[in-house]
Amino acid sequence: MNQPIVSGHARSYYAASVGALPDYPSLSGDLDADVCVIGGGFTGVNTAIELAQRGLSVILLEGRRIGWGASGRNGGQLIRGIGHDVSGFARYVGSEGVNYLERAGIESVEVVGQRIVEHGIDCDLRWGFCELANTPAQFKAFQAEQHSLADLGYRHATRLVTAKQMHQVVASSLYAGGMVDMGSGHLHPLKLVLGEAQIAASLGVRIFEHSPVLELLHGDSVKVRCASGTVRAGRLVLACNAHLDELEPRLSGKVLPAGSYIIATQPLPEALAVQLIPGNLALCDQKVGLDYYRLTADRRLLFGGACHYSGRDPADIGAYMRPKMLKVFPHLSEAAIDFQWGGKIGITANRFPQVGRLRQYPNVYYAQGYSGHGLNVTHWTARLLAEAIHAGHSQGMDIFSAVPHMTFPGGPALRVPLLALGMLWHRLRETLG
Image 1 (cartoon, rainbow, N blue to C red):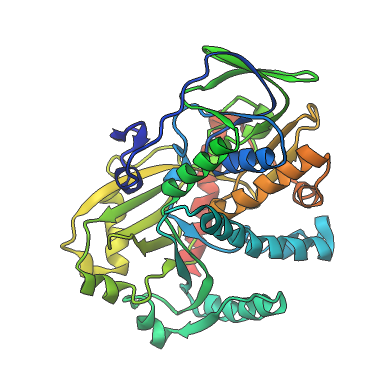
Image 2: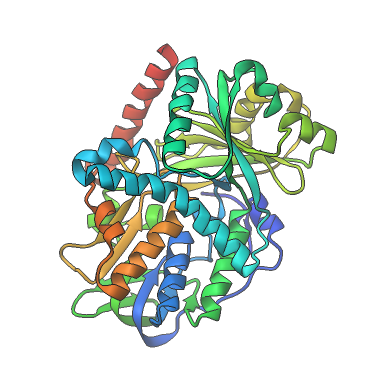
């Protein structure tokens, strides 16, 4: 994506507000470790933490900078759930498996919160989230969702907000209602992943940036070749998600790298910020090409969404996203857009993450395809990968890997256009329905 960069990162609000960026060396020479992790986002960094806490030696390789991809560019919404309704996977994992996945969607948020508190990571964490209903049917579904959370023993406060009450959470007349959840929230994702990288380094993880992997040589141990060195490890973790490319074709064909875009306004007057989002909540609607938004710590409106499957980025992200923002908040017609950026997120066909090990090379593990729920689920899958590598087995990873995943048809050349056509159909149905 052709955007100005800030110390190797896209010129996002996050990169501009993170402060000093720590530097890690590039790989030079030949090294050995128990585990090599490829990818310096939430999955890779947290897997490294979990492995190091279990006493394993770890080398982490990042092709660009820690948090360069979606982990450091996303909307910063820390929201419970693993993806779409997991009850549809009962035929693969059974009712107990579904119960596990529902609880994992809740507990994964708590894992993130605990890590932030335990290590004192300053990442602008605020609790509070509102799901927004675009239709009365969606609002009715929130009522069932609230009951399901109660059945799971959800300990955080939730409340339904009718269309007439929506001014209590957002200054917009677009919505048919909402559900407030005080167990979810929002934060500065780049500050979080950089803080977690410092935790990993303090545990002895050797981190190398600017070290893209050129080749994998499989065997009883895996040899990972970079331009200026190699890593030999007994086990390998692929944590590249949307940026795996063809490093491992068995996995890259199961995830579609889709573009997602965000704008951030100038800092808003306090009175206007409170008017727009009275409770300083994170908010997200239910459309196929969803809108999500929140206030930053310095009172900017951060507005994102418009997931793109065409493989082509908008020529002007600000011009593309601003009308979407003004449809929700016409109050901001005079507000300047200070930042605009985008990046790739990993989308799977069933909107469920892929976690497991390669059948052909059982010492190669992976996690990818979070489909918009990466902030919390990455931390959960990192724990599962570490359990499996350290103990030789993880019941949670077995449940995740029991869900089958299709390879997108058409190969690299046709994969994106075919999916773009399918998403156009879903959006047409949404408009007509």
